[in-house]
Amino acid sequence: MTPWKHKLMNRILPPVLYWILRLWFGTVRVKVLNPDVYENYFKGDKPIKVVGGAWHRHVLIVFYHFHWVTNGLIMVSRSRDGELLAGVARRLGYDTVRGSSSKGGRDALSALIEYMNQDQERRFCGTAVDGPQGPPRVLKKGMLAAAKLTDAWFIPIACSGTRVITFRKAWDRTILPLPFSQLIIDFGQPFKVDPSITDEDLERLRIDTERILNDLTDHVDQAAGYKG
Image (cartoon, rainbow, N blue to C red):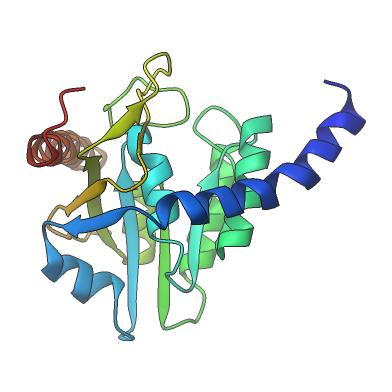
């Protein structure tokens, strides 16, 4: 695609995709399996900082479902697809930083940490924690480091649905709930990362968090009757 065509597409497609998402997800019913975490850490108006972590497979669901959260930031890759996604994200109300583990990740993580440390009462951020290219369901340390450096709560998030489209050729097998289906969302127990944690202990925490996210994913799939 020529540069001018690419620029034109990124002006036209984001508003179109925004309205498609609004109409599509507007028909989907949502069931939260751990409402206490949802109510105490995402709703209300108390001062709080939250780093949300989900697998790339769930990115479309998490991306839309949490757009109502004020002072929300997401990390979007610097790819062409990422540029399109960033345009939609801004229309949904998110702030964005551009980068990933494969390109511009250090600068994006620094910008994310700066955003979270601004003098605001409530701050939220999130991204896919198995990166933009996988391997799937293998956690990278970046968002744990962000939680450590911002004194934020890290909250594992998993999603599934009673009737979904599975993008089977995608490396992450992204899922998208069908209209008029039920979406299942669950949260792991929120935790903070000790600012004095050693690299060795951070690796142990990464492994434990990866296991928690995988168990959570299997649990919501079972609850939704999703077979993959």
